[in-house]
Image (tube, rainbow, N blue to C red; front, side, top):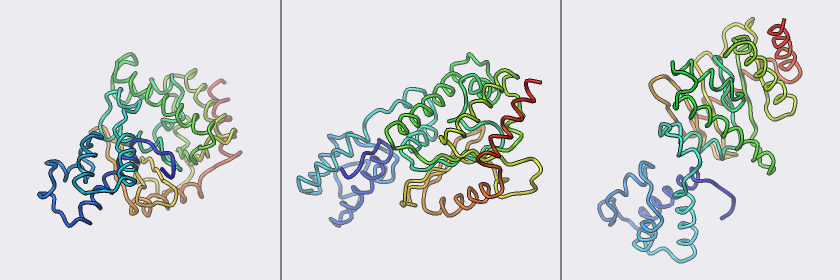
Length: 283
């Protein structure tokens, strides 16, 4: 394998290779001895490694290529940590892609972005959003996922593989005392520390700003190096989580991110505002 990848990227690469192999052999879906091949190639179904091996034999793939593709199948079939939390399929997919992204850009005008939330803030925010007690299993699971997302990003940083991380928030996010003054003060300390350490580029959009391109709504954008086709955006709502992927996603959302970085407070200015609001909470 040319690089180290996880289940999400392995799944995408495998289905693309399987489609290319079938098409290069001049076979239709009906001519392949695999009843779910259409779903496999479209990403709706994942085949276990043994069934992938049978498909490769049907395509008469040479040993070297078969070994490479079976390794992809084994990685794709592995059960990642987020699968045990009972999340929606879309949210699980997003967490999988996030674990492998080279750049993460989040615009959040309502609350602190998930990968930067403290445990107490995460429980308070999730409970309010879901209209459930903080002890409810659904709230605890979501908060735990956010903690593990943070841990994975930190682990990648420790291994020298940290993604570029941009967190863009409206000033009102800093002033909304989610969970009360003590919880919010702790959260602001965490934000300031993350920005000062270089873990994240924190961008704050002051309330004095007029209209801007982020007013279309919350989004989380994932990029994967130079491969624009893998670009992924997560759009969350109370009804469902929605993921869109492709080069057109980068073409639409990356300029919005760049616009917001250009007009917002960042670096020392962003940290200064966070510290100022933190002091207001104490007074």
